[in-house]
Length: 238
Image (cartoon, rainbow, N blue to C red; front, side, top):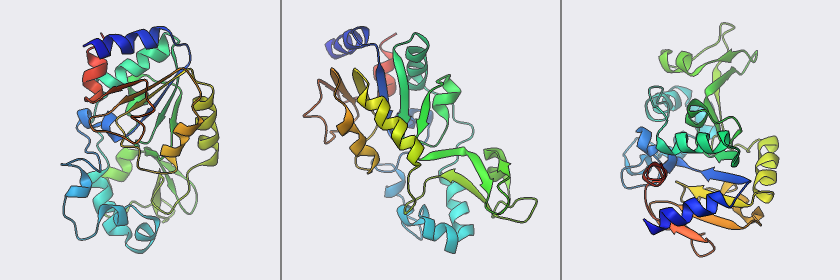
């Protein structure tokens, strides 16, 4: 409990907080992560998940890609949890400047966060590869087999697959947000996915906080580490 009090004090003393989050932020909304004991990487498929969500696999085995993607990566009934809601509240009161997320579920926006940088894109944006027409997540989820545009082109999610580069504009904004922050909260991420995990190096502020169920490579640098579910931590700050 004293760690929660310490976290509250740090937030009170900060004015430009940036939150950098990963899959652990959404697991309490019943969205599986990739690397934990019951995450996607532990399940058995015909192909390893990291192969399925690669650009090559999308191009060569589009139907199998969508079979996996629709079942294992699209959770349209998911609702924001206490972590998403607390972060939105911190933004509303002028404490939090930016949420930088590796998640593609759109739950931060659903909770009310306005300034969200999505490093890996979003399931809610989908475009025809031929004509560029926009489609929402519901269209993709409910389509039979490969989602196609009215023009006949294949609809592709605006999600960064393995072998694809991150959006340069998003990277620049993320780096700027972190480098000008006075407090950086890292939550629900094992910090093993690069280049995203490397962004932490740009932080020069006052307080570095790590909230994650398991140890991360940044724990030694942190001013505060809480090894607990992030929803629980933010939920107990009410």
